[in-house]
Image (cartoon, rainbow, N blue to C red; front, side, top):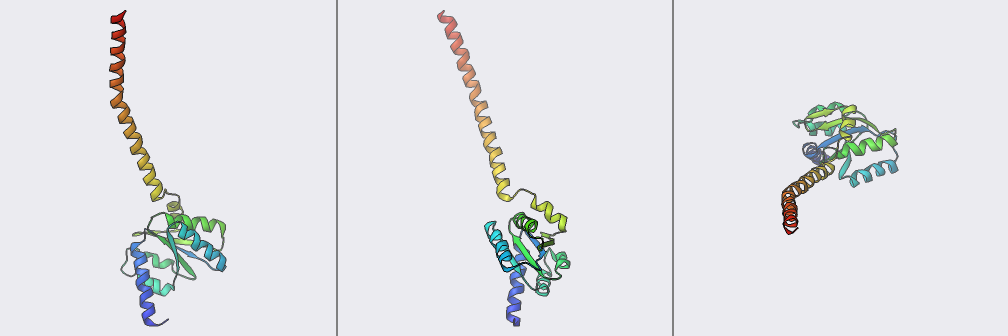
Length: 171
């Protein structure tokens, strides 16, 4: 790889570290090509990406970024799983690690927060962005129907009272 290619890789990695909601660092020693393809396919399905890069170039790309403390994790054969969604990459990595013992999660970063192994696991258990949006939409919908019911209830009560008065007057 010549200098221009290295500079391009450093720039790409810098963009990843800046724009990602979460970056997970893991060792992948011993994974077969098929297993790596499986990880990449799972990541694509969850709007994540997987990147293998030289640790030295990744450390250069981390300089000046909010997650610079993550550079200590970049030792050995590492792979980066990242996503804009602050939860998706952690979920994909955790699910993959449960099925593949050779895939060892080291930690990661969520913005300025450096995550250890336990931190990545906690993030993976959080609801995703889509789940939170659905939950909020459900709450708003329930509130709107409750308001409509409350507004409509007095009118039906008045109609019931008028009907009762009318029945008594007719009798």
